[in-house]
Length: 239
Picture 1 (cartoon, rainbow, N blue to C red):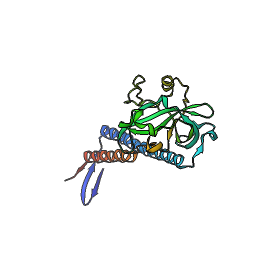
Picture 2 (cartoon, rainbow, N blue to C red):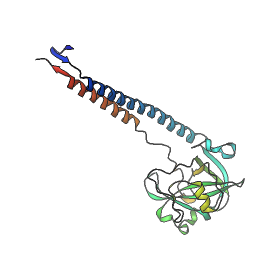
Picture 3 (cartoon, rainbow, N blue to C red):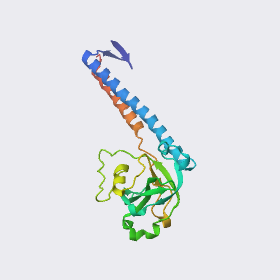
Picture 4 (cartoon, rainbow, N blue to C red):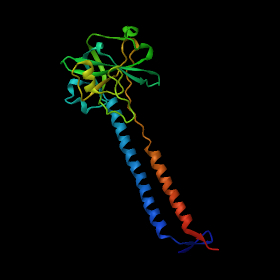
């Protein structure tokens, strides 16, 4: 096929193999780009759902028939932290400082025991004697956020029950460590700070990484590059 472009004559002479290979490669690249757009919309909706739940009015946990269906919902309840069973989770604060999350069983009025992440403390406060003014041993009203136990990440270490180091919430193993039957469908993260400022509450991570727009653009640009290479290889200028 011969055509003119800006006064110059060109001939398009497609090769069968390169045309078929380029077509299927282009189809794959555009499909990957479209998939990333779908993922972008899905993750945006997920983030918005988290935000809406987190920012909604706090509810009494007893009003929720199945609390595990309300992840990121703020709740309140009366309970007693069992501080003799502290568990330590190495973690960064929201500001990026090293420290620990202190996790204890929270005994509710109805006798249930729920895993309760009381918040973050700096390294210097790990020993209980250094933070006695930050500990409450009596029953009180707790403001918290409902969370679901997650699976162990691919690159996440196993929980070290012998050293009392926990890298993710694992209800069955925590029940074994404390010798207390703990709720295994959900757990709680403190929404408010502890007494005298520690542990730091409100450490819940609402936002998740959402780079799918960049990925979609990348795949689309690669597809455009493929088209350019194909046309360059199959269109020749006629002298």
